Image 1: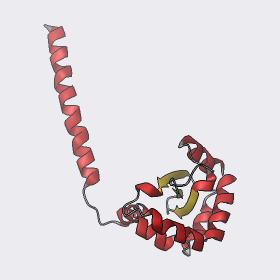
Image 2: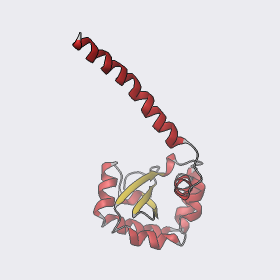
Image 3: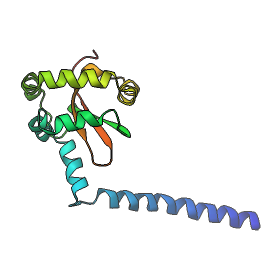
Image 4: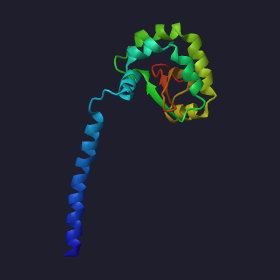
Length: 147
């Protein structure tokens, strides 16, 4: 009888866990108006990326790369509104900044570890964004072949 009670309790708990996880996910997916959510939205928007590819935050973000506590990668092709035909001209216009970025990424152990783990190279990095929490996001042109 005791064994049957344990099995029944385990069954009830296992049925409740997915509901709890779903409730947490639903809460995470709810719209937010805070600055972090706005930044995340901009991080994943191709048009915002193109507009800021050679922006004034570039130097600050580049300086943060060495001391970054974490590195996140965003593949350009996965961004909202991604348009490969718009990427080339934007990269051409910011080519000197991008070359500087790629050189710095090549010398960053954290950045190279993240890239290698994803099967990517420093030559594919085309943008950078630093967050106030010390993390850095690298934008990777996954339409380009591994350099």
